[in-house]
Amino acid sequence: MTFTTDLDSFADRDITIEAIIEREADKVEVFGRLDKIVESPDAILASNTSSIPIMKIAMATRRPENVLGVHFFNPVPVAETG
Image (cartoon, rainbow, N blue to C red; front, side):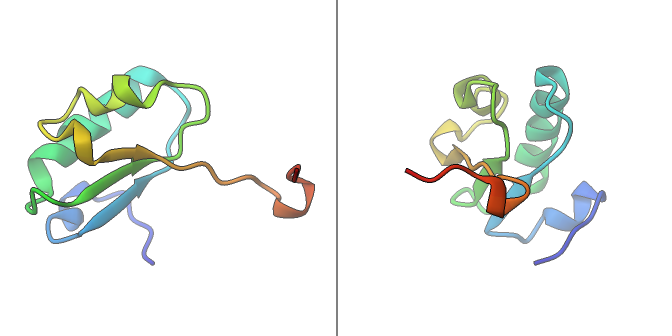
């Protein structure tokens, strides 16, 4: 796993996970850019959003079927289980 702010470095990735500020316009911008940068049409573009409908983010791409939401709780010991 690698952290970077250089979106161009994602060109050859099969999966990316975005984890930026929880602001829809910013996430849509990042996914629009990733869609142009990531070369594989089968690549997964994931968002760490917890409140923005994933379809709004997915529509910024030409591959909405490959966009998914993931959410990481922080800190893990505080996350509810059920």
